[in-house]
Length: 201
Ligand code: GAR
Image (tube, rainbow, N blue to C red):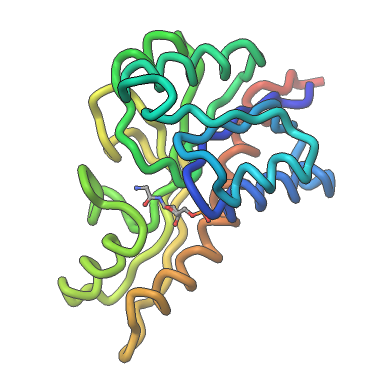
């Protein structure tokens, strides 16, 4: 069965694009059934539109509070009946209003470092790479992990890919090298769910 997947985004959407491309090429037996963003007008929503995927923006401005926006977003996601929800660059911490509506649907997240290192509250995007360089780490990487309520970046690791930190790296240079590995890791992680839900013949 082709795995129906919903994807949460906030901005650029390059991980979403990697998933869409892998589905379109047949490299991944999955289908993106919905894309939800907490910001309107972001490139990730344009990517969903270009791929013909239903999508929506759930902003605090429209819904009055983060909790109300996240509840509405979860309801929209669940109406599309996904078997997996992927957080691909979602930049808000999700609360109980979201998780309670997802029920038992598995959730994974992509993070731009080797968790459990350089994760947790406030660790998003370039800040992660700045922290890796400030700590003098010799390697970083991409992690895809399970997401559970109240465990920011601490769910079980599904896929991890390592990259070296090179002398002279800026946060942007390191981030670009990590991002290439994120795109591979997120597709590989979804493939594991595809395989886990495919009956043996
Ligand atoms: C990615 O690097 C992702 O790992 C990061 O945001 C970026 C989104 O890029 N997420 C986090 O830092 C989560 N803590 P994208 O919109 O191009 O996929």
